[in-house]
Structures are given as structure tokens and as C-alpha cells.
Image (tube, rainbow, N blue to C red; front, side, top):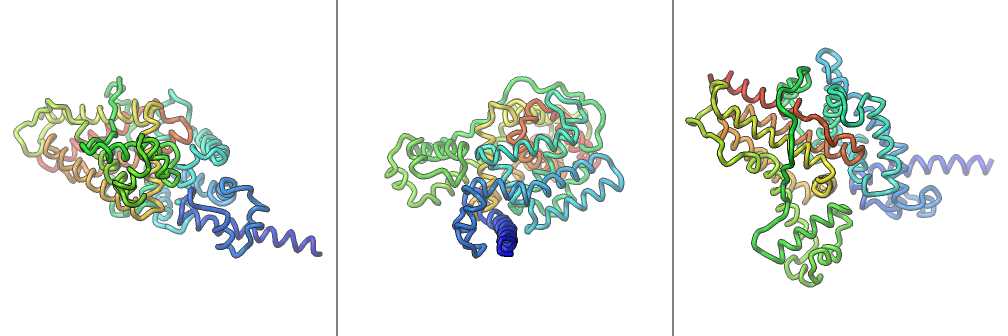
Length: 424
């Protein structure tokens, strides 16, 4: 009888630890969840935790296996039902919308573990094989892949990006309604792309150079440290060492670690976001036309806009989603992970994201004669897609070499056609 009761108590404790662990993971993220706090929150002893888990990393593994992997797989499976128009798409979109609007659900903790998994060995051993097996079962192939496989992978990446932006309060239902026509145009396109595949490389330099040698060195060193181990593990000692400076020099510039990280987030996110969405994609010899909105496809600005998006496709294919772009990819993902759980990081991300979207939309209107309200949905879609595809590349390696033309060419056609329709 006592043995049976002990087994029953152990089973209840296991369930309690998992339930409490999910809530702590949602609140604090994977790098701040510890056995002591888990025990206190569950009103158990640390012995009860360590009898089940050897260390914090094994707690994360248990949360993934027993609470989070199932909902994440179901969410990914649902995304593929949006590929074809009709009742199935409408139902899938409603399910996804409900999931995105539920901050207490398991998906935010799930995507946190997906972001962190590539740099936490114990977590990588379970998360990465799981995600790879799901995608294989859902018809995603190794690159070079069939067009249908690429469409599936791009769709999964987009809904994962939606999940991430919902987790940092940057995906409102009304935004989806604005994006829906452009998104459906991408989903429904079956014709072979007419653009040539992107060739060469177009690197986006994330190095900060403001003229302040010491601060710039510290900010750039922090970026390197964060990209390798995450925000929480980026100690002041490691950052100062990476900058080749004594720790005292760091604190002479920044009174606290938080002050340094606020500066790092503000400068780097602004540089990364604006650089990848607008200025650096517009050539110096772009024809300006006679001003105003384009009214026909004969306007020279139409072909210039195509070239701009081809450059953005090159960034995606040859840099951001390729092995050469891993450090910048990890830097973005680590900032995004921190923003889920840290209000200061979230604020910095909100400012950078909003400014970059607005800046890109206005720039494309002034340079290419496109209606800003027509361009904005495409800007939003590409930023969501980039987030999800970076995450999938880190977890699977299946994205490098994907044919992104189906997305960029569709969005180009949408922006041009809709602007002409509104202003011809």
C-alpha cells in the first residue's frame, strides 16, 4: 500500500512539476528557469525535482517531450491546410488565429525552446530530430527540393513567424486582415517563377560604427557573445574580454549590465531591421520617374522595384538563410528570444520593427511610386517569413537553397498591380 502511494505521489509530483515548469518557462524563458525556483513554485523540495531531473537542461527536455512537442506539431500540421483555398483553409486560419490569441497556451514556451535548442546540447538532442521528422512526414524534402516541398516549408515558416510575433505582442488580428490578400496571392500562385534564381552574395554588415570607439567595441563584442550563447549567458566579463577591454572600462561607459543591453538592442536591432528591409536594397541609379504613384507597368520604377526585391531574395537565399549568415541569424533569434521574456528587449524590438516597417513602406512609395498602404502588407509578410525561416534553418538545415522567388515575385506583382488599380 505504501509503495503504491509513493508511486502515486511521484506521478502527481511529475505532473505538477511539468505544469509549473511550463508557466515558469513562459514567464522567464529557457535560460532563467532553474530547479530551485521550480521546486518553490511547485511547493516541493529540490530533492523532488532532482529525483526526476539531473539538471536544468533535463527539465527543458522534459517540458518539450511531455507538454510542448505535441501542440507544436499540431500547429505546424494545421498550417499546411492553408495551402489550398476553400473551407479547409478558412478552418485552419481560424484555428491558427485562436492559437495566436491565446497567451496562456503551450505554443509560446514551445517556440522559445525551438529558438534555444541549437545552442543547448541536451535540448538539441530531442527538439531538432523531432522537428526534422515532422517536416519529413509532412512532405518537406532536402534541398534541392520540389516546388511543392518549398511551398510547404515556406508556409510552415510563415506560421512559425506569426507565432513568434504574437509572443512579443507584434501580431494583432487586424494586421492579418490587412495582410490576407497579399498572403493568399502567394499561397495560390502555382506558376513557375519567371525571375532568374538569385546569384552571388549580398552581405548585410551588422557592425555598429558611431565614432565612439569604446562603446562601439562593447556593442559589437556583445553582439558576438550573444550570437553564440544567448542574452542571459552574455556576462559583462565575457563581453569586456571579447572587446579586448577591462571590465572597468565597460562599467565606466554603462553603469549597469541592463544599460549596456538596452544600448546593444537599440543600435543593433535598428541596424539589422532597416538594413534588411529598405535602404541597402535600393541601387544608386534607380530611376525616379516623374513622381506620384505608378499608373502602368511601363513605368521604369516597376523594373527598379523588381530589382530591389531580387536583391532582398539574394539576402534571404545567399546570406540570412545560408551557412555564411549563421552568426547574424543567431543574433537575431537570440534578441527575439529575449524579447519574449524581457520587457526592455521587447520595447527595443517594437521600436525597431515599427520604425523599419514604416521607413520601408514610405521609401518604396517615394522611390518606386508604390502605394504605401499596398506595400506595407508585403513588408509585414516578409519580416514574419524571415523570422520563421531563420528558425527552421537553425533547427533543420532544410532551408538553405530554398526557392524564395515564389514569395518575392508574388508580392512584387501584388504591389504593382494593386497600386495601378488604385491610381490608374
